[in-house]
Length: 451
Image (cartoon, rainbow, N blue to C red):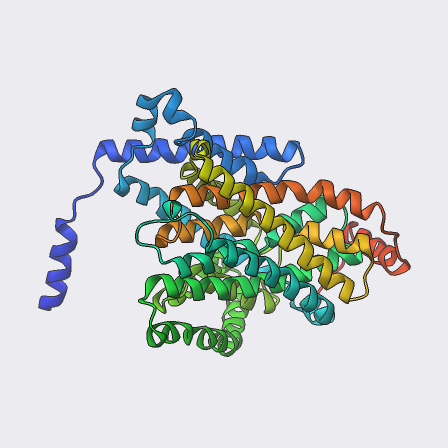
């Protein structure tokens, strides 16, 4: 046996396993967080709110906002302020967010993007540029006392712009489905524009992350950003082998092999972009788009993975994200004022941008407002962006709380505004045909043999 192998085995052997107490605490953390997250997520869904709102509230209730004040002893035992133990929770949550982001990419309808590309691109462009610009401007006006000591003002401003510019496909798609608006032209255009937003958002997030993790010299920043086109090119070149791999896995008929393969691809893609100095979620999303474009990631094949991610891993991630929200920070006038300004600019920027893009695409007033309402929902994506900012040291706990609050409030605004706006938009003949086709697709088909 080689000396290198012996050294590796020796190093592995001396690493002590988790002690009994840490294991018990970790299991209580996971079990308690998941139980409360699922319960509050179901409660939110019952009141026609996105489940992510309830899942985030689970962490808020168990974190420094409430439990730490009502029962400090229980809070210190259940959620000890020990970085090592929080990192264990973060590791579980990271797995969930990467798989969730990959699944979002798999649901991206590239055919829809191509068919409605011109109008959607125009709406998406205005819908992301205006709030992005307002966010960057606000970033230079935020009181310096709220910024982390190590944060660069320019990097923070760029990061806040990205956080205010993104939208959230999962929240919007679920809202449109529940409100039976997917067959409407506005629903189709909203999904298409948000899909483009997501792609641009992940690229911008990777760029800002590169700024945060490198000294801001032209050479180091360009070296990081040069990986973006390389990653995009790699996605195009790897599509044929990924398609061939998924075809072979599908034909094998081995239970669970397809889901394991998809999971491996998503995690390796995330690892690749993370190693390149970009964000892992960018790699997972892009890999999900490639997997979805192969045609093998059907809802039936992905059902088990979807269930595990949406029912277990994602709630744990969002509950963990909620643990870092400290609503007591809003008692400080500077924090409260910043929250009101950031929320106002985020809502105005997205509404005004989407509305302007819609009007330039010769759409009506109410259609423009409906598009603004749909694209204003930031939900899952902005929470992920906020967690990235906190991890990179770009956001302080107070600013992190503000960004998460924007994600929650904008997601809650979407359904009522959509309901009012769409009541003023008449059905077209094409929309009625699309609705009948969707109903026919959902109807049980007669049993037939397929080759």
